[in-house]
Image (cartoon, rainbow, N blue to C red; front, top):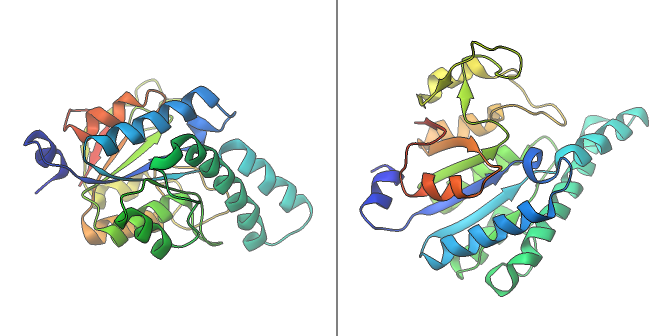
Length: 236
């Protein structure tokens, strides 16, 4: 049963929300971060099981560039980006107060344990070689999530980059098989910035996790997705 149908019928879902650093941390937007904290608590109070994974945005990419100029290898570049993403996660978690986990989890097991105790979890990166997209997909797999929503800086997935091509058309529904043709990179790179990380696609496809890509500059779009409203691009 698809997550949106469950919501329409009045049941609750297990949701992993991937919040792009491009919208909350490029540059840092305190008001939007606070709005996402409010959204997470609202969803929790509605009875949903909620976890979020946030990226490090432009600061993480700047730190990667610094590491590159220092001739540090890619795993070290990833490490500094992970630190930034965890800092963003910590800010969001602090804003949640008592409803959130005690700290930013550094493992999937730690995250799952906090979720099992009714806490809202907010994660950043985990290990070098893994993007926050992949972390979100793995967390969804770990907790058996019904739905993964990625809040990004675009309205969904387009046939072409809408920032470069006026004839770009938004796709309302897409299969995981068809998604691969819209990925710019087929392998991990430090600071990769695209629709979804290739490893995340592999994990989500394997478990057939319903995934929605939407514009996250207004957190209310996430609520609409959870309620089963037509928004963004649905991947299934």
